[in-house]
Length: 193
Image (cartoon, rainbow, N blue to C red):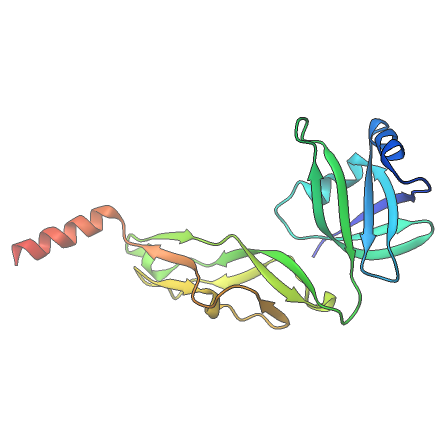
């Protein structure tokens, strides 16, 4: 799993006026919580591109005032007009303490049903999980090689050590659909009989 390094500066002044001045200078105000106490800091907007503008799950190493904190990006606020990053919240990772995160779901392999004309469809792209920092990973992988035509994989079929999935077990995450041409051919064959 990739870790993005963010070098920030501790905020000495809080409030609207100070926050507006930070943004006008090209900085983004941030808050780090979940550890011993809240840490208010800011950094240039360019520091956050690698962690904000990606679909991958990444952790952050936030360096502020000579201290280093391992954290995850928890919330992003964008400007409604310009889409610029307005504010970021980070949650500090504490060993042994579970956090809620959204991890991408990657399907691995080619289903057996795809070889006979089926089409693999992924119905869920991300899964919400509870995990301790030592069990966090870049993505959840699901092997779909054993799926036949019309086969479905559900949340209950995903087994990943150290992660508690927060979705209902019956929710489908992937299926091998039967193409319309195959359905029509089967219907025509049934009419002939």
